[in-house]
Image (tube, rainbow, N blue to C red):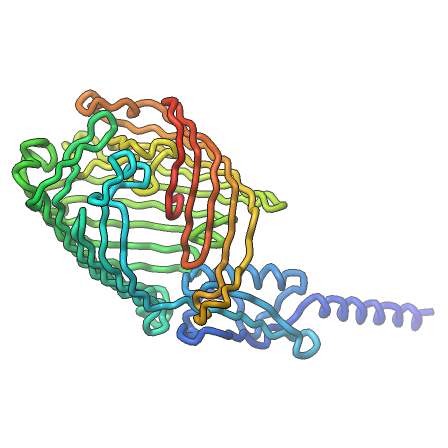
Length: 462
């Protein structure tokens, strides 16, 4: 009887061991295909999968997808595919396949000088209020995800800009470097805000001339945490006409502004697809100090913070909730040219695109419920180049609700209707996402001022 019990125990132990071993696999290798330009070590920097790793069978698919999204967020590829196969019992080989973007892009530029399409249209949609020129951008030019750019623009604003960035300059691939130099002249210039609307002056002469130079360092910890430090020097001069129209355009009625700015920023980025995320979260914090030198025209700081959550509800339904806030040092006489709140870039309540709400502090919330109606890669066989003949296209009907509060110390000076009160906008829309990170948003909002109409925007929400 004792021998029989011993046999049962040994058999049970053997069976349990075999079952446990069957639940795990060993990664023999991770192979990349299609990265003709991009170096393997840049791609491996994004992975938490390596040769020799042991994985649970149940987690293989999720880990592959998880790392595929990180590779996609390098913005080097039109698409990324991940797969694996078993090369021997309990051993697998993982393969990631890529279609690289066209990295050398030289193209003409035609864009609106106003803050958005609605603002341009409301000002008479004149072709004189446009900017045109050429951009030359070389991404990934040595296969290390560097970026070199040259931008030359004229028209409503004249601009010349040279930029360079390299995400990894050290062997451990944690430290990055960036630099930029910009020269801008304006013959059309906003000099004041009245009734939450910009007042602009046009002239045959240059109304403002400015240049700036910046040097930045970026530290990446593991995968999702980024620390950023930048030092920037800015010099600008405005015509006497601007100073006379608005003595507070620069500090103490001066027509010149020079200052050194120091910025520290932190970002936690855990999104599935940075240009148009559907899952994950992103947290940002920034501290800016303006006027480091004793002779600088400015001397104050501001804090900015934002958090965005992206939820997958299942069945192709998604919710996005994004919050942003800015706080400026009190009791500082900040010039008009340096007070920016809502109405610039994506910092706006949908429905208030025609308005600029100046202030030193603000809180903004943008919330969107969306449905993925269409998501496919469309082949265009008539185009011979593979970087352009496979077009990813996604379409999302949306419902949105935004609200904000802007604090303005002296709203009577600008006759502001929307500062120091809550404003909101809600409505329906369509988002269109396609290749090279192009995002187009169409919306029909209704706001608490009673206005409504079609809103068109291109770019990311936050």
